[in-house]
Length: 133
Image (cartoon, rainbow, N blue to C red):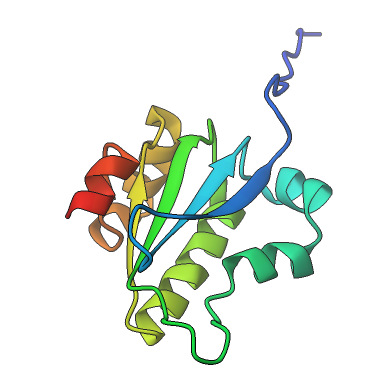
């Protein structure tokens, strides 16, 4: 019999933090940890994750114009993580909100390339670059 090698993640648990950008019209979603269905829903119940990604604004509040996905601290993403991002992209489009992905690791960039999402969602090197465009 052969020997099997198992891959384990030695990074922080998955989390998403919603932050204000340099401009009031910019919302940054900072993803931390591997974005897989197991990691995401172990760390954040689906309702909590959906609330973080929600684009609704309070009455009288100016809706955002730019949503930056900061993937700098997201070492890996599977198809379910990408599916959540694709759904979020569609939601942004329906609200007239520009969405940009920034700071991708080589593994996350490869998932975007293989699925051709890199032709749909604009990708930049840094959050600062996303905010300056």
